[in-house]
Length: 117
Image 1 (tube, rainbow, N blue to C red):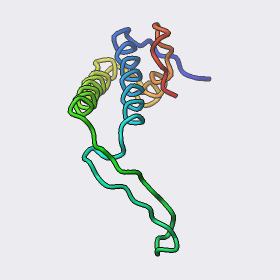
Image 2 (image 1 turned 120 degrees about the horizontal axis):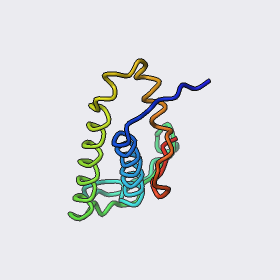
Image 3 (image 1 turned 45 degrees about the vertical axis):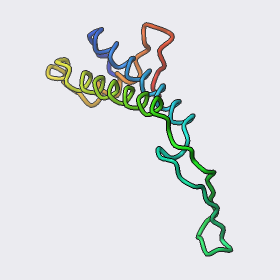
Image 4 (image 1 turned 90 degrees about the horizontal axis):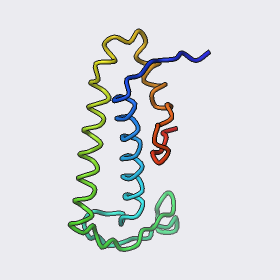
């Protein structure tokens, strides 16, 4: 049977926000060009001596706005990771490893926040 933990609401909220920020960052990375800086694309084929075939289109690079969005989300993610990691709850928890795993699966009170799974 899974162990139940009485997580403080601020810890649950920070974890929910962390899920949200990670989802936003992942979605942003998926939309961005493959290279931060402008670079030419390539096509590698087995016939040209490569072990496997791969290709990439030319990358226009990221705009200054896109770079700022990534930086802002990464900074927010780091703040939230620090908040969760350094929360006083962990000092009094008898099994922090199991509790940390359980916290990742707590349903956020706000249904608009994603759940990490």
